[in-house]
Image (cartoon, rainbow, N blue to C red; front, top):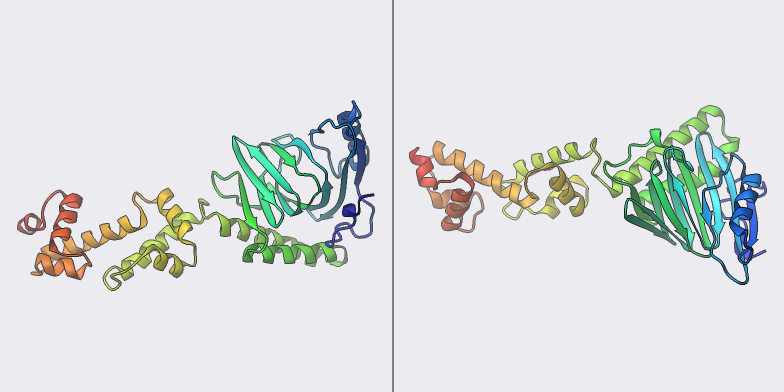
Length: 325
């Protein structure tokens, strides 16, 4: 047997033999039927076979080896596979009621759904909503962990099919460390401790999703409100207020800040900052005797002419006309 088919360092399933361990010659005209029949015989209900399609070669054999472990309602598989293609997911398909994560150690996966594709090469992971159909391809010599979590346990980002991340990112490292420890100790834990470990695993999965994609309907409005509050406080005092300053204050990436404003606001980050400065300047224009030049300097416009131009574009009249009114 190929040495790469050996037991993973994760020791999924402990000392138990593989649930699926199959070799099928590529030259066999009935190779796909043989593969699926043998898979169903070996895997049964515990590791159901997705529809698979083997390429035709004149020599060599396709190899697949899967060890499996259940941790309450979480399902973990240590998978090794040669090159193959297939389909998974769907409301009544393979693991259609779950969110499935592939943590790839060698080789790679390619997933396609609704004309969008996601890749998980060595050192990466891919978290997918599996209620819709997915086409997938596996590269030769691919070793990965597949972790299935009940879809009802996670709040998946809105309008997002899948999330990819590097395994060395902080959120992924924390998740993987906990998941590995849970898999090693799950058989030794009392029911209450096992339930707590399961819930912690799900929370870490949720943290990974939110760390990668902050467009969830639950998170985004709160983040937008926090950004606007920070902007309001810094409008007058910080002449060089920038998206980086705002993102750092909220402990998110600049990319996430841009995405929140794109989805939830009617303007970009800096357009919103400029608009609020104009509105605050207009309030002072009618309530104080500050000159146009003084207001322009106070609210961090380059000079009086830039302020007048921006003011007219925003309010449809000049500052002088507003003051007269």
